[in-house]
Image 1: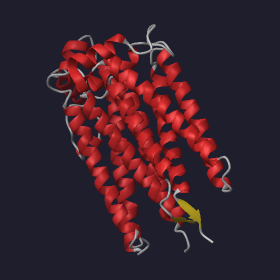
Image 2: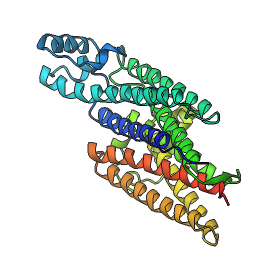
Image 3: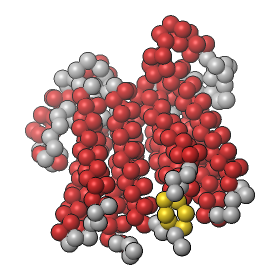
Image 4: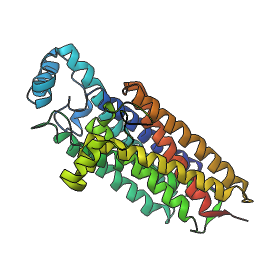
Length: 337
C-alpha cells in the first residue's frame, strides 16, 4: 500500500514538537521558571503581557506564592521577566502542538486520507495531548500554595505522560512508514523499552527532589557505594523513602542506569549472529546511544548539574527512548516480501 507522505510528515512533526517542548521544559525546571505564571488561561494566556501595567499585574500575582516569598523576595521586575519567558515559551509550544495536530487532522479527514486503522490511533493521540495539558496545570498548582516548587510526584507524572505520548506517536509513525509485518516476538526489546521509560521517570524524581545536587562523585557516593543514608531511610520510612530520600532517589537512578546498559549489551550479544542486518545495526546504535547517555549523566553529576548539561541529558533521554522504540519495532516485525 502506498504511503501517505503528508500524514507521515505530520506525525513526525508532532514528535519533534514534543521533543522541543520537553527540552524547553527542562530549561524551565532548571532555571526555576515553572511557577512564574500562576494562572491557566488556555486561550488568552497565549498572549504575553504587552504593557508595563500588565507586567506589574503578573508580577504581583507571582508575589503571592511561596516561591517568591521564601526564595525570590529579592526579585525585581527584570528578574521576573527572565523566568516568565521560559514558562511562557513552554506553554506556547504546548498550544502549538494542539494546533499542529488539529488543523492537519481536519484537513486529512475531510480529504478522506485517514484510514480506518489509523483513525482510532489519532483519537488516542488527541486524548493523550489533552491529558498532558491537564497534568501540566495539575503539576504547577502543587507549587502555588504551600511549596516553593512543584511536587516531584506530579513532575514525574507530567514528564512520563509527555514521553509516553511521544513514544505512542513515534511508534504509530513507524508502523505507518515501515514496510514490515508485525510478528510480536520481541520480549527482550519490549522489556528494555519499558526499563528505559522507568529510568526516565526515575530521572524526573531526581530532578524534582534536586537529588542530583548531592553525592556528586562517581562511581562511589561520597566514599560509599551503598550510602548509609539510603539504608537508614529505608529502615526508618520504608518504601516511601525510595521516592523521597535524596540518597535513595539518586542511588536507584544510578542502579537502573547500570541495569539498562547491561540489558542493551545482552540484546547486542543475542543479535550478533542474527542474519538480519537491520536488527544488528539498530542494536549497535542502541549501545552507542546508551553509552553516551550514561557518560553524560556521570559528567552532569560531577559538574553539579549545570543547566546546559542537565538539559542535554534530558534531550539524550529522548533519543535513547526513541532508539528503544525503533529496536522494539524492528525486532517485533519482519520485512514484507
